[in-house]
View 1 (cartoon, protein in one colour):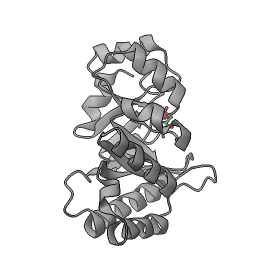
View 2 (spheres, rainbow, N blue to C red):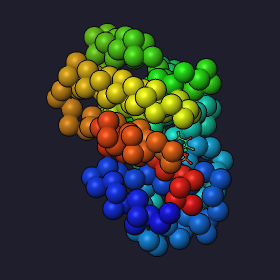
View 3 (cartoon, helix red, strand yellow):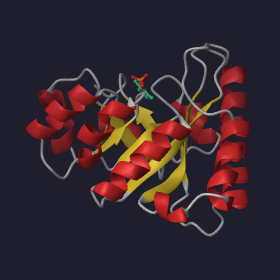
View 4 (cartoon, helix red, strand yellow):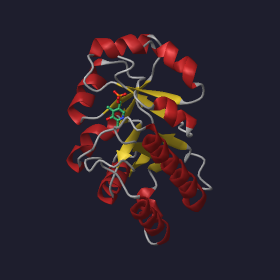
Length: 216
Ligand SMILES: *Cc1c(COP(=O)(O)O)cnc(C)c1O
């Protein structure tokens, strides 16, 4: 499918072109077409592609990020969508302070049934945000811009299950917004929907879809 075809169908939802495993040429093709936001899931691939491609590309990290890679990737990124643990969040915040860079983050939520998916449970995340709000030195997180949440539905043909997982993400997003981020205009993104389920995701309130195979 062409990028224009997808854009026509998604209206106001932001398209992240997931370029993991794709060649520099394939990415450049979409860039020439006007795409600026790309998603990568591995540090090494990001480093290579960032070096080879135009500097106005906005790179989003969408894979599990090991803390020992933060130093390498943070300077290259606009957004880390896959913040899936307190430790990772804390280390990103520390490095962001050190290099004096503001970074957008999305908190990754685990809603899918599969055991392998990373992410916070709704309860764990609310505990963490309460802790940050009440006890932590807010300065420690001053370079973190909390922009919303990211989630992946189960990889299944059961549309009802996928739909209910997207609904759960939307409900959690609304709850977090009112409990923790009512005063934060940046907290506005619900990143959900991939090639196989983006239409369902948009119907359930996605503001950002991450499309790979369908685009390339
Ligand atoms: C690979 C990946 C995508 C894109 O998946 P497609 O099915 O190729 O559209 C989206 N989000 C994440 C987190 C991914 O790892």
